[in-house]
Amino acid sequence: MDTMLPNGPLQVVFSFDTTGSMSGAIAEVRGRISDMLQRLQSDIPGVTTAVVAHGDYCDADSLYLTKHIDFSNNLPELVDFVNNVSTTGGGDTPEAYEVMLRLVRRTLGWQTGSQRVLVVIGDAYPHPPNDKQNKEHIDWEEETTLLAGMGVRIYGVQVNSDKTSTNFFRTMANITGGQHLKLSEFSTLCDAIMAICYREKGAEFLQNWEAEVRARDGRKSLHSDLDGVFGTLRRADSNASATDIAKVIFTKATPVKATTGVKKANSRARKMSHKVGKTASKPSKKPRAKSFASKSNIIVVGVVVEIIIIVVVVLIRSLLLLLLIIIIIIIIIIIIIISVVVFYLLQSNSSPTFRKMIREKVPNTNFRFNSLKWSSWKLAVVPKGLEVASGQWRDCLGGMARARADSLVDGHKKGQAAVMLEMAVQTRAGARRHVMWGRVRPLSTSGLSVTRLLASREVRLQVEKVVRDGCRVWVRVAVLSRRQPVAEVRRQLVTVYDYAWGSLKTGCVRDVWAPNGKPSHKILIAASAAS
Image (tube, rainbow, N blue to C red; front, side, top):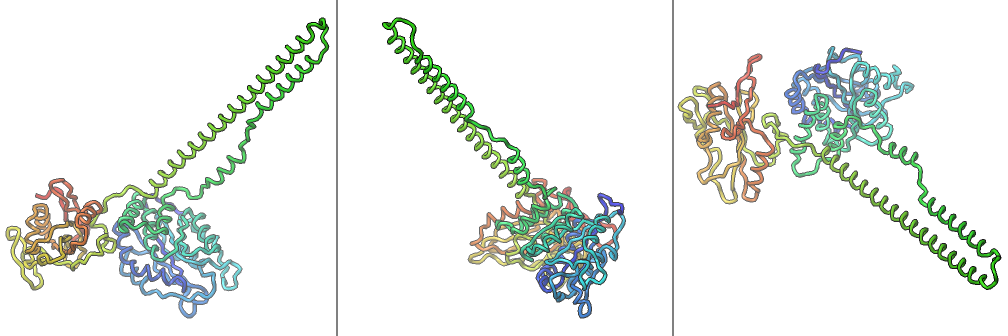
């Protein structure tokens, strides 16, 4: 087995069954592959990705049997491969999964000491070794075992409920120490893939991703597919069976006979009654004058003893019945307590503690307020001397910068109440915009300009710092109507997202560094010590 390092670089292979029934999965991944890979490379330094597409033997001549791109961190090449690989036809229910497993083992460039993950996405199962189409007699179970020996963990993502397919995906996961995940819809596939990658990086990464997905969906309940995926990935061992344990307990339990004491008491009563009867039937040896009195006394004593015995038996039965009732009540109370404890444990597991999300790390596609009518990003402030597009500009910040002079949004009209704004920093032309500040503000009759935004001390100090370092500042605006709950929107914005340019009064400003295009060189674009 290759040497595995606990913190070695993560290598992830995404394998797709590209036959006809899986076309929906391919389309879903194509729509989000760029954002997914960019996010993974940002959150998991050193991660490299390979992609394998496979059809079936009948596709080899007309299309392809397998296509792949080896491990790489070249985002354009990976995205281009996924977007341009064609779907295949298939032909029969088994597909060439066994060929894919051998390709992953033999052909891909695994690094020594890396963390190795294979994500198999499909809805069918492989050809057995004796299948006439499987001319190389590839045994998929043997290939899986060899991959496990290389330290490759397989996650089987199954998008149907076929029993044979279920056995295939579950067996791969069990042999390699991975997990078997089942989906009912293609729409949840990309979130499930991201969850697998974050789980391999660490529990905290998985927890943060789950919190982000739940926050993105807002008040809607989480899709059952994703709820199951997160639950499976959180559990350390998903194979334990409480049912089996319960069977053992109830099989070995010995029933207690509660009527033993009653039977013994009845037996003693019958014996005593029999003795009394014998005593009463013996002929008296005393004079006949006392015979009647003696017999009467014996009868009275016998009746009294019989009554006492009956009373004792009734009391014993009553006590036993009372004891049985008490035991039943205690058992019911214990069951209720256990049920409450289990309920709260399940609730705590299914609803992890919510954390604020770092706004500059959340892609716009996952931003909760995407449904608002946002303006495009507008260049707002640039260093003085920097060429800008045509438009009205004026000096600001003591002459060290130039700001857009025209209004970002006109004065409020009927039905308009407030605006949501976001500011972003760009270290150089064409580079990524890092969102640093966001607010919900009332909309006045005079509109809103960049100059008015710079009047805020917390914004002005941060803008001065980044402009001094040659950065550009961008702004975008969304107008809220009076029908929208402005106070609730403002509350959600500050409780869900953590903006780097927080409040200087509360000390919530974070230091953020961003690359400026030069190797190993970064710029401080948010500074807690700005002054």
